[in-house]
Length: 191
Image (cartoon, rainbow, N blue to C red; front, side, top):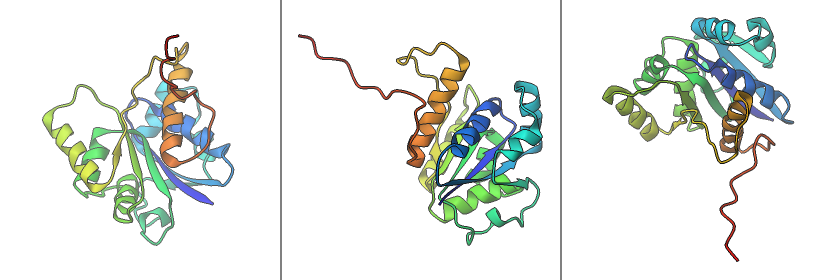
């Protein structure tokens, strides 16, 4: 059983976390543990047609963001990876500076200290030097900085196509099979 912790923060792009939860629920042998911040809930309500309670039911377990004593706050809780989708600059900064003022940051900090993959879909643009330094610091600590950048070689026709490609790339990083996009095969040689 693969255990994936998912955090949804208040950055724009709540659909990335929701779509990831849907994908992981369809993946055999995967168990999800979810933490949604207060502003993550607000963003879900504002940006999507999903009900927050429905999103929380997509995970096997859902924790209160303020419960820093929850199971996922401990290194003894076995996890295979954590994904924060989307990830606010505040959450990224907390992780970069080990300032665990809520369960998402605490669980992410523990994921790093246990040397497990921590994937952060950082949502902000443009970036100033402080943001970039925090990204470098997190990369040096072992995190994977993964801004959700659309690709166009797959000729997306809908926002769902763009979201699915990003979620497929996350699944790739987690080592999980999916059918969200066709991998780039390169240009065909000329005859």
